Amino acid sequence: MRHRLPCVYLLAALCGLPAALQAREAMTDHPLISPYEGSEIRRRNVVEFDEYHAFAGMDEAGKEPVTIDLEGRITKINYINPKDRSRLEMIRNYESALLAAGAQILYQCNQDDLECVARYAGPTFQKTSDIHAMANLAGRYLLARIDQGTETAYVAVAVGQSSTDIHVIEIRAMESGKVVLDAQALGKGIDLRGYVVVEGIYFDTDKAVLKATSAPALEQVAVLLRNRPELRVFVVGHTDLAGSFAHNQALSDARARAVVDALEADYQVDRARMEAHGVGPLAPQASNASEQGRSLNRRVVLVSRS
Image (cartoon, rainbow, N blue to C red):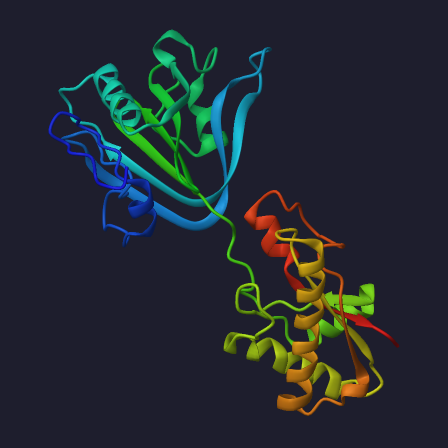
Protein backbone atom coordinates (compact mmCIF):
# COMPACT_ATOMS: atom_id res chain seq x y z
CA MET A 1 0.00 0.00 0.00
CA ARG A 2 2.94 2.33 -0.25
CA HIS A 3 2.16 2.91 -3.92
CA ARG A 4 -1.03 4.16 -5.50
CA LEU A 5 -3.25 1.39 -6.77
CA PRO A 6 -3.75 1.35 -10.53
CA CYS A 7 -7.30 2.38 -11.45
CA VAL A 8 -7.51 0.39 -14.69
CA TYR A 9 -10.22 -1.97 -13.52
CA LEU A 10 -11.43 -0.31 -10.33
CA LEU A 11 -13.64 2.72 -10.64
CA ALA A 12 -12.93 3.71 -7.05
CA ALA A 13 -9.32 3.26 -5.99
CA LEU A 14 -7.98 3.46 -2.45
CA CYS A 15 -4.55 5.04 -2.48
CA GLY A 16 -1.52 4.20 -0.39
CA LEU A 17 -2.30 5.25 3.17
CA PRO A 18 1.05 6.57 4.46
CA ALA A 19 1.63 8.71 1.38
CA ALA A 20 -1.96 9.89 1.40
CA LEU A 21 -1.81 11.07 4.99
CA GLN A 22 1.28 13.13 4.24
CA ALA A 23 0.46 14.33 0.73
CA ARG A 24 -0.60 17.83 -0.05
CA GLU A 25 -4.36 18.09 0.05
CA ALA A 26 -5.94 17.89 -3.40
CA MET A 27 -8.23 20.64 -4.53
CA THR A 28 -11.08 18.21 -5.13
CA ASP A 29 -11.02 14.54 -4.19
CA HIS A 30 -9.48 13.15 -1.03
CA PRO A 31 -6.10 11.56 -1.86
CA LEU A 32 -7.13 8.39 -0.04
CA ILE A 33 -10.07 7.46 -2.26
CA SER A 34 -11.25 8.58 -5.67
CA PRO A 35 -14.95 8.83 -6.56
CA TYR A 36 -16.89 6.56 -8.87
CA GLU A 37 -16.09 7.43 -12.47
CA GLY A 38 -18.38 10.14 -13.81
CA SER A 39 -19.25 11.56 -10.38
CA GLU A 40 -19.18 15.33 -10.00
CA ILE A 41 -17.99 16.93 -6.78
CA ARG A 42 -20.57 19.24 -5.20
CA ARG A 43 -19.13 20.22 -1.83
CA ARG A 44 -16.15 19.48 0.36
CA ASN A 45 -15.36 20.19 4.00
CA VAL A 46 -12.19 19.45 5.96
CA VAL A 47 -11.60 19.79 9.71
CA GLU A 48 -8.09 19.11 11.00
CA PHE A 49 -9.31 17.62 14.27
CA ASP A 50 -12.82 16.81 15.46
CA GLU A 51 -15.00 13.96 16.64
CA TYR A 52 -16.98 11.77 14.25
CA HIS A 53 -19.73 9.28 15.04
CA ALA A 54 -19.62 6.61 12.37
CA PHE A 55 -22.98 4.96 11.79
CA ALA A 56 -22.74 1.18 12.37
CA GLY A 57 -26.37 0.06 12.54
CA MET A 58 -29.22 0.33 15.01
CA ASP A 59 -29.63 -1.13 18.49
CA GLU A 60 -31.67 -4.28 19.08
CA ALA A 61 -34.82 -2.25 19.63
CA GLY A 62 -34.23 -0.42 16.37
CA LYS A 63 -34.57 2.95 18.09
CA GLU A 64 -31.05 4.29 18.58
CA PRO A 65 -28.09 4.24 16.20
CA VAL A 66 -24.98 2.29 17.10
CA THR A 67 -21.83 4.29 16.39
CA ILE A 68 -18.07 3.94 16.33
CA ASP A 69 -16.81 7.13 17.92
CA LEU A 70 -13.68 8.49 16.28
CA GLU A 71 -11.35 11.49 16.53
CA GLY A 72 -9.01 12.84 13.91
CA ARG A 73 -8.83 14.71 10.62
CA ILE A 74 -12.23 14.59 8.97
CA THR A 75 -12.91 15.11 5.27
CA LYS A 76 -16.50 15.12 4.00
CA ILE A 77 -17.16 15.16 0.26
CA ASN A 78 -20.50 15.00 -1.54
CA TYR A 79 -20.66 13.93 -5.20
CA ILE A 80 -23.45 14.09 -7.73
CA ASN A 81 -24.00 10.58 -9.07
CA PRO A 82 -23.73 9.76 -12.77
CA LYS A 83 -27.29 9.32 -14.04
CA ASP A 84 -26.85 5.99 -15.77
CA ARG A 85 -25.43 3.98 -12.85
CA SER A 86 -27.31 2.09 -10.17
CA ARG A 87 -26.66 2.39 -6.47
CA LEU A 88 -25.76 -1.30 -6.34
CA GLU A 89 -23.12 -0.98 -9.05
CA MET A 90 -21.58 2.05 -7.38
CA ILE A 91 -21.43 0.64 -3.84
CA ARG A 92 -20.02 -2.66 -5.13
CA ASN A 93 -17.21 -0.79 -6.89
CA TYR A 94 -16.36 1.15 -3.74
CA GLU A 95 -16.44 -2.07 -1.72
CA SER A 96 -14.23 -3.93 -4.20
CA ALA A 97 -11.65 -1.14 -4.25
CA LEU A 98 -11.52 -0.96 -0.47
CA LEU A 99 -11.15 -4.72 -0.11
CA ALA A 100 -8.45 -4.82 -2.78
CA ALA A 101 -6.51 -2.25 -0.78
CA GLY A 102 -6.68 -4.38 2.38
CA ALA A 103 -9.55 -2.59 4.12
CA GLN A 104 -11.92 -4.31 6.53
CA ILE A 105 -15.63 -3.76 5.91
CA LEU A 106 -17.07 -3.10 9.36
CA TYR A 107 -20.70 -2.59 8.42
CA GLN A 108 -22.93 -2.27 5.37
CA CYS A 109 -26.63 -2.03 4.71
CA ASN A 110 -29.21 -1.52 1.97
CA GLN A 111 -31.96 0.94 2.83
CA ASP A 112 -33.93 -0.20 -0.21
CA ASP A 113 -34.72 -3.24 1.96
CA LEU A 114 -34.90 -1.17 5.17
CA GLU A 115 -31.71 -2.78 6.46
CA CYS A 116 -30.16 0.46 7.74
CA VAL A 117 -33.11 1.96 9.60
CA ALA A 118 -36.54 0.37 10.02
CA ARG A 119 -38.36 3.39 8.64
CA TYR A 120 -36.92 6.77 7.73
CA ALA A 121 -33.14 6.67 7.31
CA GLY A 122 -32.49 10.26 6.26
CA PRO A 123 -32.81 12.01 9.63
CA THR A 124 -30.85 9.27 11.43
CA PHE A 125 -27.88 9.48 9.06
CA GLN A 126 -27.90 13.26 9.07
CA LYS A 127 -28.02 13.59 12.84
CA THR A 128 -25.54 10.79 13.54
CA SER A 129 -22.85 11.19 10.87
CA ASP A 130 -23.82 14.31 8.87
CA ILE A 131 -24.59 12.08 5.88
CA HIS A 132 -27.18 13.60 3.54
CA ALA A 133 -27.06 11.29 0.53
CA MET A 134 -29.19 8.58 2.14
CA ALA A 135 -32.89 8.95 1.43
CA ASN A 136 -35.57 7.78 3.84
CA LEU A 137 -36.33 4.60 1.91
CA ALA A 138 -33.40 4.24 -0.50
CA GLY A 139 -29.63 4.15 -0.42
CA ARG A 140 -26.67 1.87 0.23
CA TYR A 141 -24.04 2.42 2.90
CA LEU A 142 -20.76 0.92 4.06
CA LEU A 143 -18.16 1.66 6.70
CA ALA A 144 -14.59 0.41 6.33
CA ARG A 145 -11.34 0.59 8.26
CA ILE A 146 -7.88 0.45 6.78
CA ASP A 147 -4.60 0.09 8.67
CA GLN A 148 -1.06 0.58 7.45
CA GLY A 149 1.67 0.51 10.02
CA THR A 150 0.78 3.03 12.70
CA GLU A 151 -1.74 4.86 10.48
CA THR A 152 -5.47 4.14 10.57
CA ALA A 153 -8.32 5.62 8.57
CA TYR A 154 -12.06 4.97 8.41
CA VAL A 155 -14.04 5.46 5.22
CA ALA A 156 -17.83 5.87 5.20
CA VAL A 157 -19.57 5.68 1.81
CA ALA A 158 -23.27 6.41 1.37
CA VAL A 159 -24.69 6.06 -2.15
CA GLY A 160 -28.07 7.73 -2.41
CA GLN A 161 -30.59 8.36 -5.17
CA SER A 162 -28.83 11.39 -6.62
CA SER A 163 -25.60 11.86 -4.67
CA THR A 164 -22.88 10.05 -2.74
CA ASP A 165 -21.24 11.06 0.53
CA ILE A 166 -17.66 9.98 1.16
CA HIS A 167 -16.33 10.68 4.64
CA VAL A 168 -12.70 9.93 5.50
CA ILE A 169 -11.60 10.00 9.13
CA GLU A 170 -7.82 9.85 9.55
CA ILE A 171 -7.16 8.85 13.14
CA ARG A 172 -4.66 11.09 14.84
CA ALA A 173 -4.04 12.85 18.11
CA MET A 174 -5.06 16.43 18.58
CA GLU A 175 -2.26 18.94 18.19
CA SER A 176 -1.88 20.24 21.71
CA GLY A 177 -0.18 23.38 22.89
CA LYS A 178 -1.79 25.58 20.24
CA VAL A 179 -3.01 27.97 22.93
CA VAL A 180 -0.57 29.68 25.26
CA LEU A 181 -2.24 30.86 28.45
CA ASP A 182 -1.40 34.47 29.26
CA ALA A 183 -0.26 35.58 32.70
CA GLN A 184 -3.78 36.48 33.77
CA ALA A 185 -5.13 33.04 32.84
CA LEU A 186 -2.23 31.35 34.60
CA GLY A 187 -2.99 33.39 37.72
CA LYS A 188 -6.65 32.45 37.61
CA GLY A 189 -5.70 28.77 37.48
CA ILE A 190 -3.41 29.18 40.48
CA ASP A 191 -6.14 31.00 42.42
CA LEU A 192 -8.84 28.50 41.55
CA ARG A 193 -7.03 25.18 41.99
CA GLY A 194 -3.63 26.00 43.47
CA TYR A 195 -1.93 24.81 40.27
CA VAL A 196 -2.04 25.38 36.52
CA VAL A 197 -0.77 23.46 33.48
CA VAL A 198 1.53 25.67 31.41
CA GLU A 199 0.56 25.07 27.79
CA GLY A 200 3.13 25.72 25.11
CA ILE A 201 6.32 24.44 26.75
CA TYR A 202 8.12 22.05 24.40
CA PHE A 203 11.22 19.89 24.73
CA ASP A 204 13.34 17.94 22.29
CA THR A 205 12.16 14.33 22.16
CA ASP A 206 13.26 12.37 25.24
CA LYS A 207 15.50 15.26 26.33
CA ALA A 208 15.40 18.15 28.79
CA VAL A 209 16.30 20.71 26.12
CA LEU A 210 13.70 23.47 25.73
CA LYS A 211 12.62 24.27 22.18
CA ALA A 212 12.70 27.88 21.01
CA THR A 213 8.92 27.70 20.56
CA SER A 214 8.58 27.58 24.35
CA ALA A 215 9.54 31.25 24.64
CA PRO A 216 5.99 32.72 24.58
CA ALA A 217 4.85 30.42 27.40
CA LEU A 218 7.96 31.08 29.49
CA GLU A 219 7.48 34.81 29.02
CA GLN A 220 3.95 34.58 30.42
CA VAL A 221 5.15 32.62 33.44
CA ALA A 222 7.74 35.35 34.05
CA VAL A 223 5.07 38.04 33.75
CA LEU A 224 2.92 36.18 36.27
CA LEU A 225 5.79 35.98 38.77
CA ARG A 226 6.77 39.62 38.24
CA ASN A 227 3.16 40.75 38.76
CA ARG A 228 2.84 38.66 41.92
CA PRO A 229 6.06 39.15 43.88
CA GLU A 230 4.66 37.19 46.82
CA LEU A 231 4.00 34.07 44.73
CA ARG A 232 6.37 31.12 45.15
CA VAL A 233 5.92 28.00 43.02
CA PHE A 234 6.90 24.42 42.52
CA VAL A 235 7.74 23.83 38.86
CA VAL A 236 6.69 20.21 38.30
CA GLY A 237 7.64 18.08 35.30
CA HIS A 238 5.40 15.22 34.13
CA THR A 239 6.00 12.48 31.55
CA ASP A 240 3.98 9.76 29.89
CA LEU A 241 4.44 6.04 30.66
CA ALA A 242 6.72 5.20 27.71
CA GLY A 243 10.09 3.89 28.88
CA SER A 244 11.25 2.83 32.32
CA PHE A 245 10.03 4.47 35.49
CA ALA A 246 13.56 5.51 36.51
CA HIS A 247 14.17 7.13 33.12
CA ASN A 248 10.90 9.07 33.20
CA GLN A 249 11.47 10.17 36.77
CA ALA A 250 14.90 11.56 35.89
CA LEU A 251 13.63 13.12 32.66
CA SER A 252 10.73 14.91 34.36
CA ASP A 253 13.06 16.25 37.05
CA ALA A 254 15.56 17.49 34.45
CA ARG A 255 12.82 19.18 32.44
CA ALA A 256 11.49 20.97 35.51
CA ARG A 257 15.02 22.21 36.26
CA ALA A 258 15.43 23.36 32.66
CA VAL A 259 12.33 25.54 33.01
CA VAL A 260 13.62 27.05 36.25
CA ASP A 261 17.03 27.62 34.67
CA ALA A 262 15.47 29.41 31.69
CA LEU A 263 13.23 31.60 33.85
CA GLU A 264 16.24 32.64 35.94
CA ALA A 265 18.72 33.16 33.09
CA ASP A 266 16.50 34.58 30.36
CA TYR A 267 13.71 36.30 32.29
CA GLN A 268 15.50 37.36 35.51
CA VAL A 269 13.11 35.51 37.83
CA ASP A 270 14.55 35.02 41.34
CA ARG A 271 15.43 31.33 41.59
CA ALA A 272 14.57 31.31 45.28
CA ARG A 273 10.91 31.67 44.30
CA MET A 274 10.97 28.49 42.21
CA GLU A 275 11.62 24.87 43.18
CA ALA A 276 11.93 22.19 40.49
CA HIS A 277 10.60 18.66 40.91
CA GLY A 278 9.73 15.79 38.61
CA VAL A 279 7.05 13.17 39.23
CA GLY A 280 7.52 11.15 36.04
CA PRO A 281 4.34 9.29 35.05
CA LEU A 282 2.84 9.23 38.57
CA ALA A 283 0.11 11.83 38.03
CA PRO A 284 -1.41 11.32 34.57
CA GLN A 285 -4.34 13.41 33.48
CA ALA A 286 -5.31 11.06 30.64
CA SER A 287 -4.89 7.43 29.64
CA ASN A 288 -1.46 6.44 28.34
CA ALA A 289 -3.09 3.94 25.96
CA SER A 290 -3.31 6.50 23.14
CA GLU A 291 -0.97 9.12 21.73
CA GLN A 292 -3.53 11.78 22.50
CA GLY A 293 -3.49 10.79 26.16
CA ARG A 294 0.29 10.54 26.28
CA SER A 295 0.65 14.02 24.79
CA LEU A 296 -1.56 15.41 27.55
CA ASN A 297 0.50 13.68 30.21
CA ARG A 298 3.76 15.27 29.00
CA ARG A 299 3.43 18.66 30.66
CA VAL A 300 4.84 21.26 33.04
CA VAL A 301 2.72 22.41 35.97
CA LEU A 302 3.04 25.38 38.32
CA VAL A 303 1.97 24.62 41.89
CA SER A 304 1.55 27.42 44.39
CA ARG A 305 3.81 27.26 47.48
CA SER A 306 2.29 30.38 49.01
